[in-house]
Amino acid sequence: MTSSTTASRPAITLTIAGSEATGGAGAQADLKTFQELGVFGIAALTCIVSFDPKDNWNHRFVPVDTQVIADQLEAVQTCYAADLDTVKLGMMGSPATIDTVATALRSQQWKNIVLDPVLICKGQEPGHALDTDQALKAILLPLATFVTPNHFEAESLSGITINTVEDLTRAARLIHAASGAAVLAKGGVRIAGSEAVDVFYDGTVTEVLSAPKVGEVAVSGAGCSLAAAITAELAKGATPLEAARTAKAFVTEGIKNRVSSAAPFDALWQGGNR
Ligand code: PXL
Image (tube, rainbow, N blue to C red; front, side, top):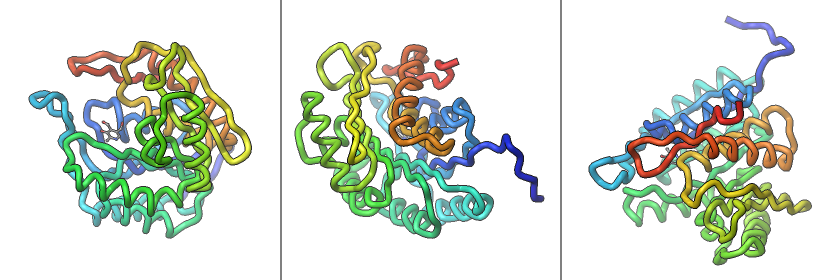
């Protein structure tokens, strides 16, 4: 059935990401963020991650069959062919998944492809993860319009060691030069000092986004929620810099209001902004 377009029709916003069952990270975090920020969230799953409480909360990782990933994307892209122009890419987990996702992305035009370059998943074979990292850099990074590396990912993508805000800025510029994308390089809790600092660079503007650190331990879902918030804001028409600022504020509130559990890490609460 076809419904008529109304002034209040929300922006259709897709995440292609993994499931993280406890709800802190992954597609669950993305969809909660999309809902909070007033866009119509849809999700295609790439893999299923189950933390293992019997093994130091390491990740148990199961990829979704590539044909099933392609089927989900066919359904989504056919349903929303008229107005789907914004997508977030989260955890891919394997080179085969990256190939499948890239093929689907290339089948249409996009305004915004936000890449959260999730490079490491505990529990994967190192060799396997290396292949995935290389495929991500070679295949998805060139398609991205916005990329949100964390400290580790920014070091890996830029090839430099990051200890200071100046290093983070240099890394953001190098990653922009390699990709052409707007970059928000996240220092998070990993750069010394009382502030959680991220650096935005889009080829023209450099802006250091800063908020007082809330504790010294990273919170589950912060990276996913930040990239998802950027994606939602871009889908609503914000500029990359505006989207980065709004997303930083959203994540800061979510961290302040984080949810604790029996796991050794807390989860960001996307409703912290309310
Ligand atoms: O935060 C990175 C991340 C992304 N996607 C999934 C995850 C995680 C970390 O746990 O499980 C599915």
